[in-house]
Image (cartoon, rainbow, N blue to C red; front, top):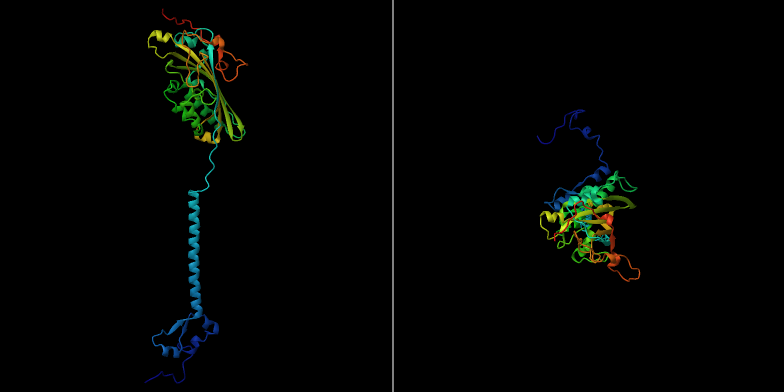
Length: 374
């Protein structure tokens, strides 16, 4: 039998396959237009037998192209963001606008004055000299370079910052006035390393070409003796003085180190015997150093010198103290002590105008003075 046989009384109600199964679906115009596929007409299928039975609707193609366009725009946007981010990183690393260079440090100004004695220089053993001199109560070495107690904060600097400035000044004073290598002229590195790098140029000029012109004296930066003239008699150096700090601006502190150093010296060619020890004399240096500390100096533990004032003796007034100090030794007399003083009628900078008299009270009175053998 061909075809479909319907029951005599029709399809029973509720049976599957009846028209009532799709009765709830409404295929209106909006449903049809929303379909993404469209069936070819019978004529179109006859014209092109190999053509697919359906084709995308124009609206679906438009939506597809629109989705692809949005995908491309999103990709381009991501690339632009990545490019901008990479450019920002590159500009941060290779900034064409360099930070302004730190300004040059103010040059150090110095004043060095030899002190000439009226009487012959007293000689004895180091212990005898120290015991019978104004330095008898001084501390030995770095113990004489003390911080104020207590250390107080200022308006714009904490107690720790003020203390850091004081410690920086102390380190410089110890290295430049007490280090045996510096005192004997065999090293300058321990002093240079503590300076702000902006002052290295002036320091190097002072060491390589010292001049007593107020700016280029090597002895303004450190105490050192002429190795051809004198040598240290032992490691004992008596020290007494003060360190004071004050705020000079919201970003700067000033520390003033004012100390007296008393060295035991003897002739450079003296031996190690008893006579050599008894031929020791004392040499005193009054040294006032003015330091300038900015916040970066405190962080980097470096110092900036502003001014140095030094009085040293016993020395000859004619000695140039710019390169090194040449003490008068036991039994020696100053050649031109009577010429010391300032002549207001003398024009220019003269040696005499930069020399002073060493007070007799500043000289030791040893119990067993040295006497040279005939």
